[in-house]
Amino acid sequence: MIKSRNRTADLLKGVAVILMVQVHIIELFAQQQIFDSLAGSILLFLGGPPAAPVFMAVMGYFIAKGKSSTSTSIVRGMKLIGLGLLLNLGLNFHLFIKIYNQTIVTSPWPYLFGVDILFLAGFSIIALSVFHKFFKNKPFPYILIIVFILLIPQLLPFPESLGVWSYLFSLFYSDSWWSYFPVIPWLVYPVTGYLFYLLESKLNSLINKQEYRVLTFSISSIVLVFTISYGVRVASTLHVYYHHDFLYYLFVLNFMIFWSVLYDFITSLSKNFITDFIEWMGKNVTAFYVIQWLLIGNIATGLYKTQNSIQIIIWFVAIVILSSLITLLWNEVSKRKLR
Image (cartoon, rainbow, N blue to C red):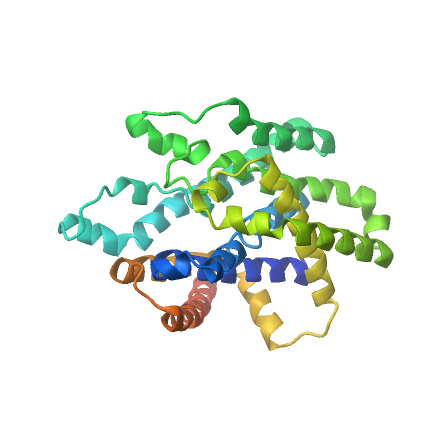
C-alpha cells in the first residue's frame, strides 16, 4: 500500500492517466461497434476503477499527509475548479467554433460546464480541509462521511427540471449526461484515501509484514475473480458508472486494495525505462492530463466515432508521445519563469 510520496504513488497515478487517455479515445474516436464490443467493455473498465478512483484516492492520501492549512487548501481547490472550466473551454474549442458556424447544431452549455475530474479534485480538496477542521485525525467521522455520501442517492431522488440551475447541481448531485464526476458519489474516493492515511499509522506494524501483504493480495484477488464481470458491466455502462452506488464502491475498494498491493510489489523490482516513464507521468499528472484532453477533445470534433482498431492504437501512441513532449516543454518553460 502507499507509504509516502514514493514510487508506488507515482506509478499508480502514471498508469491512471495513461488509462484515462485510452478511455477518452475509446469514447470519442472508436467506431460504435468497437465501443459496444467485449474489447470495448474491457477497455472502458480499464479506464474506470484503475483510473479516476485510484487517482482520487491517492490525492486524498497525500492531502492528509501534506497537512496544508485550510486557507491554502481552499485556494488550491478554487484554482483546480477554475482550471477545470478553462479546460472545458479549451478541449471543446473546435466544437464551439462549429456550433458558432452552425456546422454542428447542439447546445454549447453542457460542454462548457461538463463536470470533469478537475472540478471533483478542486471540491474534494476544499471538502477535506473543512472535514479536517472539524474532525481532525479521528478516523470514525470519515467512515461515517463515506457511508453518508453513498446513501444519499438511495434516499434522495435526483433533482429534475431545474433549468439553468441544472449546470450548478451537476457539479454536486445530478444524473445529467454531462455530470461525469459529481461530488456525490465521487467524493468517497479522496475521503477513502484520506482515511487510509489516518489508519496507516495505527496499522503500520501489520501493513509492513510480508505475510499480511500476501494474505491481503490473495483474498482481494479471489474476490476480484468472482466479481470482475459485475465490475466490467458497470464500468462499460458509462451513465451507471458515473453515478454508481454503494455496491460498486465496495467493488472498487477491493480493486484498489488489489491494485495498490500489486504496484507496491512492482516497485520492489528493479527500475527500467518503462517504469521511469510512467513515474514521470505520475509526477506531472495534472499537466499531462490537461494536455491530452486538449488534444483529444479538439481532434474528436472531426473524428467522432469514425476510427477502426488500428487507427485507435495509432492515435493512442501518438497522443501519449505528443502529450509527453508538450509536458516536457511546459516544465522547461515553467522552470525558466521561476529563475
